[in-house]
Length: 116
Image (cartoon, rainbow, N blue to C red):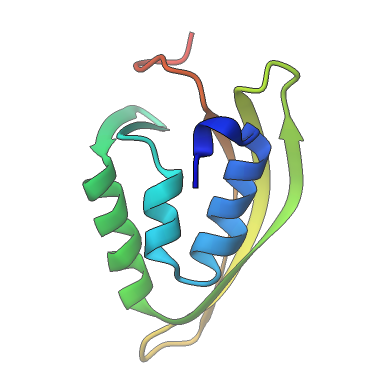
């Protein structure tokens, strides 16, 4: 699969709805960049593809089931930015069901570092 030829929205949707929901680590590897920058409150972390994949695999080990739904997807006209609002449900091993929700912004451009 050549992700460079795919629209950013398609890549983000495939990552969230197919790779995560189907627990398809090979697909995630195809969709992830060589390095990615995560921006959290007060923290910026650069991850290699291998580190990101390990994080995904480690998360899957925590859950017996998990499912993500994209409630809203907004793609910029520039073809580089995609924002999603998602809800996830899952069952932690040995525990009850959990629900998570978040807003994430993906930049398929080539700049790293802090948001300007």
